Image (cartoon, rainbow, N blue to C red):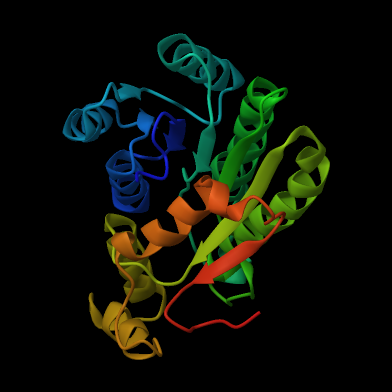
Length: 255
């Protein structure tokens, strides 16, 4: 039996990486999906692979009118929203004395503001019938890192928001939970590696290799490693799970 049959979902940042892997997992379980991503062409390609009425929407999570339009179009096409995966995020890093206001504003606009207001809009749509909301945090939200202050702070905020929203919305039958991936081999990690190469004076690829070597599981994560937890949190099996953030990181963090 397909665990998400008849369900509809929005996945922000769903065009590639972890978002696309979760979308493919949800589609296998019977869900129809809005791939909501600022990269429309890639989102359209991902939605086409999924079939089952899935579609792409050019979402910019930093703009409230774009969020409202995305939610409205998903309601129009699917008749409602059962699942939201708040996955859209960006990364930046710099030594403490070189953090810029522009970098701070950009990271928090996507990773925190966009997540809050997407969650708010979808929760309003879910009230009266319930639903599942999954926020993608990070192991970076569990601890500070000398070169990654702003990103770590943004992902710590995601964990905190998950707790607060979970408590606020469960009385409406809306379960809010999160996933904290560890180091995952996605196109974003190539950008991360390049920044570490710059600030730690390393050859490109060395940081990625060192990080992978230190994962207790024995390798970096793959986007597909996040799918099982994401399906569980979207399904009825997680009905009594509220305000939790699960570490899916190969054993890197225990909490």
